[in-house]
Image (tube, rainbow, N blue to C red; front, side, top):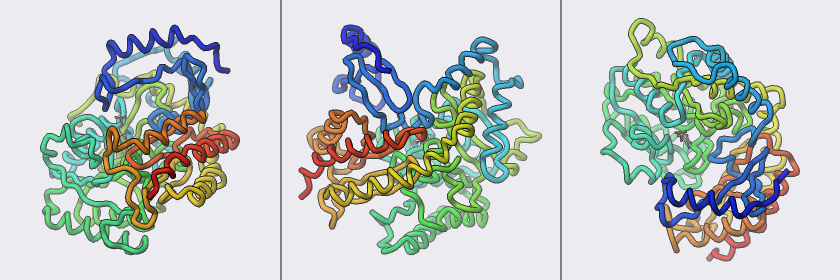
Length: 452
Ligand code: PMP
């Protein structure tokens, strides 16, 4: 239930925020962060009585929605018995979380190193790969996002890297497959896959395979546009890694824990098992910060009799781990992963395809589960994006108008460049899915006005 509006309190919250909170990724004086009063399930509301259906899952992390009573109760119970304890001890919540995660990760990814979030999981995965191989270079994709700490932002291909790129020591970037905007002049998925693999292998050969420690890929790139790789690509990367003794890191920070309608996105690609797999976000729906690296037997062996030189004060924090245990149990008991798969296949996917037919601004719909992107274009033939790459200010006006219209219709949309991502909680109901599709339908009319 949405409580009584309280605009006065809302104004005070906003005033203190404006005075003292320094916000991520923002020009501090050019933003106006909405004040959120509360949230439940798939919705949140402000102090003025506006309620929004959250098609962003926060930052794609509330996979079980807001304020799930069982997870809230588990956090309360953990706080009552052991709020915190240092990482060098065996703690029930921590060992149970590790067991539940290891049971669900593919292959022999059976050891879990806990971090505070996704970026530090990537940092540690890379460090493990370098120590395991004795090599330094890491290959990452241009269309990628791996986090905001220094090594993670260097590995990121997305333009958010530019301002903080410290010369990207040891990082080499490559083009991963993306047929809609193919870098390989490919006409179909098979060609895109073959040529992308050839390009990757050529890159390794010219870099010197003996210098390459790891290849890092998001299993299904998220922030960069939700691009499911063509059949055979990840298996091909696995083969290349094996051929040259390179560690294969899959980043499942966004795509993991039910988002794609399976526990992990890699489960869609039979037989593919990375050497290291990063996770965060959905592991406990972001109720308490938590991330980690799932480690294969071979990499774990490197540190069996030699110390792993790295750690974090809050590694495997009991509150975060108790939230993870409760979240995983809720996902299992309530069929959350199955719900994401079914709603994606039967409602969201067909609904978005229908919108694409009726709205000329939609160039492509792609995705699966609760993980979809609409690519908005000025012209379907040329595929010219609706706003220029990395647009800001006036140049971004068409996407801003789309966003404002969605909010007017009670939908909080995820917008990145010329795309809107449809990434609601995996607990979404069919009625909520339809409500969101209707709001998108109305908002896309704004985008259509800019089609040339
Ligand atoms: N990897 C991927 C694939 C991500 O999507 C993100 C966050 N969007 C990160 C890493 C970084 O995670 P965090 O913000 O929790 O550090």
